[in-house]
Image (cartoon, rainbow, N blue to C red; front, side, top):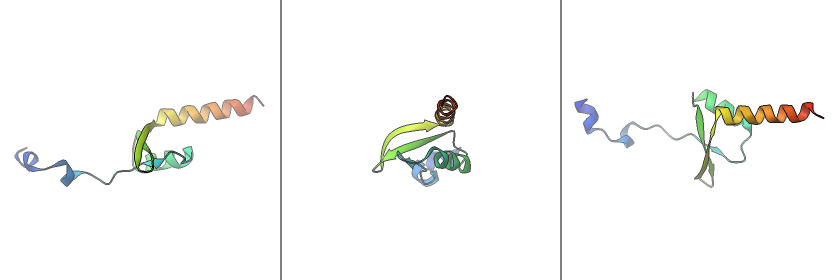
Length: 71
């Protein structure tokens, strides 16, 4: 604990992982799985525009599947 008091966040942080807003759902989910992330930052021109969760992506897959089964 004493050592932790001397460390800064910059010294322990990892390189950020994010996806561009036009990234496919499959790619976003693959990145999230690879990095064991429940959510992923979504960026446009390196600026945060939102957060996508596994639930968001799963819902989008389900909605797409349901709309295809109606046709």
